[in-house]
Image (cartoon, rainbow, N blue to C red; front, side, top):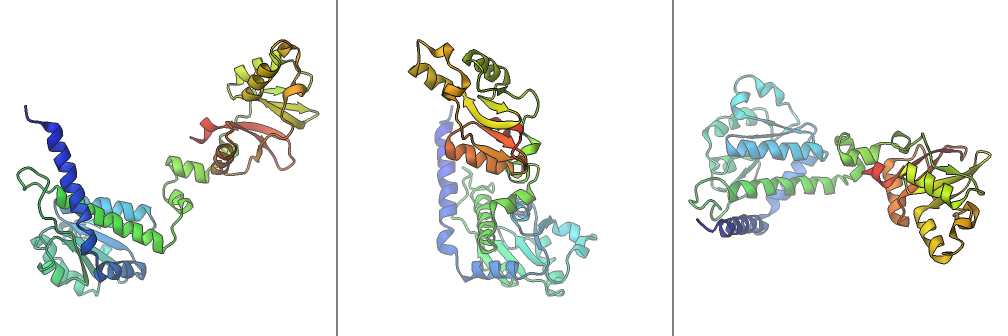
Length: 315
C-alpha cells in the first residue's frame, strides 16, 4: 500500500507553498480592488464557472458574513434572466483559473456596457479576463497538489486564500468588530453570547438560597442539589453574601475538627460578584473569566436577587 501519510504531507506542503507564493504577487491591484469595493454604493457580485464557481460561492459567503453585501451568480444563469440582479454601483469579482473561460468572457461585455467595475482573479495575468478587467489579482500557482498535476487543488486553495485576504482587508478598513460579526450570525454561539441577555439564560427556579445561620451541611446540600457551585445568602430579600464550593473546601482545610459546627456567616463572601439581569451574556462570561469564578449572582435594577448564571450557560 502507498505511503498515504507522506502523500497527505506533500499535499499540505504544496498547498501551503501556493498560498505563501501569493505574497510577492500582491501589488497595487489589490489596493485598487479594496478601494472599488469600499467605495461601491451597491453589492459585490461574485461569479465563476465550475470549480471557480464553487470557490466563488464560498468567498461570497465569507464576504457577506463580514460586512460586505455580496452574493454569487453563475454567469450561465445571468444569461437567462439573472442579469437584472446587476445594478449601477455594483462591483463584480470574476474568478477563472485560466482567465479564458468562455462562459465568463461572454459575460464581460454585458458588465462593461453597464459601467460595472470588474475585479478579476486568475492564474494568468495575460489572459483576456485580466485584460478587460478594472484590476486583476494574480493567483497563479507553479503546480497543483494533485499527484497528476491535473485536478484543481493548489490553485483553488490559493484562490480561496486570496478571497479571505480581501475579506480580512475589508474588515480592517471598515473597523469590523466582534459585535458586528454577531449581528450577521445571530444564531451562532458568538451571536448568542454577544446579543443575548443574562436574563435569557440565568436560572430563576430552585435557587440555592441559605441564611447566615445555616449549617455547613445545609449549604452542602443546597449546592449539591443546584449543581451550580454556589449558594446565595439572602435575608429579608437582601443579598448578604455567597458561599461557593471553593469557600467550603478552604474552610474544611482550616477547620478540620470543627468544620460541621461552622455556619454560613463564618465562611461566606460578603462581596459576591453580581451582574444585572439586563447585561449581555458576553459580559457575564468576561466577569467570570477575569475573576476565575464559575457563577454569578444575578440582580435586578433594585439589587434584588432574580437568578444565578454559571459558565455552562455562556457556552
